Amino acid sequence: MINSVSNSLKVLPTTTETVKIAPAESQKKFASFLADSINKVNETAIQSDVATEKLAAGEKIDLHEVMIASQKASITLQTTLEIRNKVIEAYQEVMRMQV
Image (tube, rainbow, N blue to C red):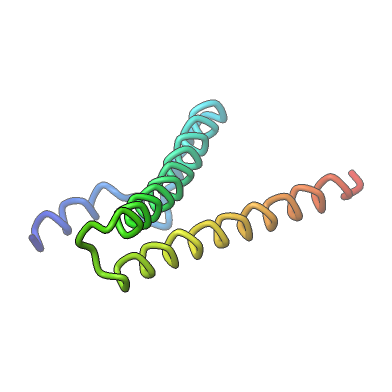
């Protein structure tokens, strides 16, 4: 385990090295990061819906599990919206800058 971690750290660039990535490649990476993040938020919402449906149908599921799943989905969505708001605010600030 420790060897695999140390081996993976060896491939990371040090502070003196610079890694040059093409703009198109960085855009693709950022787009895939955003898509993955949104998919994770959606998965938590789906898990919450499934747990709620099981509870409503009378299946064997604890109420606290349903409430925890619901809160996880709510917090994840709220966090995503706050991050979106900050990104939009930063974009607007950059657009107001004079060049």
